[in-house]
Image (cartoon, rainbow, N blue to C red; front, side, top):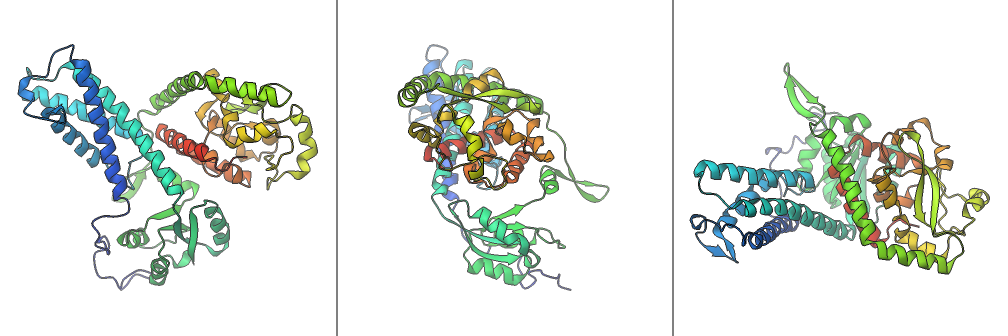
Length: 475
């Protein structure tokens, strides 16, 4: 008997592709990632060979030929490393290609394997230590650095390309989700269907007829084969994006296991959780210190400009609520009149925030002409690097809010205070000033807390750089 609401008319294996294409839209990205990793290895070894000139040379037994000035042993090792990276899914367009920490681990593992294999092959024949360890360290740094640049480049390119989206959701949610999705300037809804019909053949045909490039689903109804819709879309190369519940987001972390003949998901902690958080703090301090040193001329220039264009102090200090509700002084470059805090009470009736929790006024009369530029470019936020150095804030985390806003919180909103606040976060890269209800921002903060990893912080930093460069959503 055919399964209700299934695609039983399709006789081939559900996993078989329909298009028969060898190359997809993501092929250029895969090739660029491969090229960036190869370039990182070439650069690391080129520098390593220059440093090694003062020490022991490479044994002649390991130099069979040379190509582009690099010995044959490099090209063999590079091929092995790139193969290992590929087997780890770091070139797959929908895999781990943005997992920068995983890339660092895989490259390091490759070097360790090479060291072990070389030892067992001939303990007396190995690369000079000065070359091996310098090439290893620089390979990791360059590979991660180049991938961050490639990631930023693809984010910029994707933001300029329109994405055709087909929405499947309960009828009472379609309007809300449609508006939220189309806030992204490059998202366009090309069709909608009720969640109850998600597994119908007619819905699949509507998706194909709409030429959708992505399908977004909320409230996917249960069926005997949970992945039916996914496999049918995969045949045509159409990504599926699920809008999960909080419980489903927790389950997403799980590892599939069979226990007592039952399919289960084991949700547990990683062994490096504590070290990962310590590394986050170390990176905060190092990057903030480097930022302060490199941006010192800009700080001085902005300070002079503020003094020359409007009366009042250079910096604006405001009490904000941080970790576990502790109040601290957050620093910014002043972008408003010196008496802006007093005037806010008079402007409360003009608040454009839908629920009144936040105070937002697009054309705020208190803003100075220079202040408008500083806010548009986010330069006004740079003094918070000092807050990071003092330990009040992190580079990435939920945005600390003024006492006025926190006083209007619902009880569940305070969960965001369980982690140290940040200069940027998911809220800032997901809409910034365009988010109407604070509930939307709070859910992004909770998602960040539930799914935190050092790699997520790096992704947020990359996206923040792109948004700041193009001035999206700031006023």
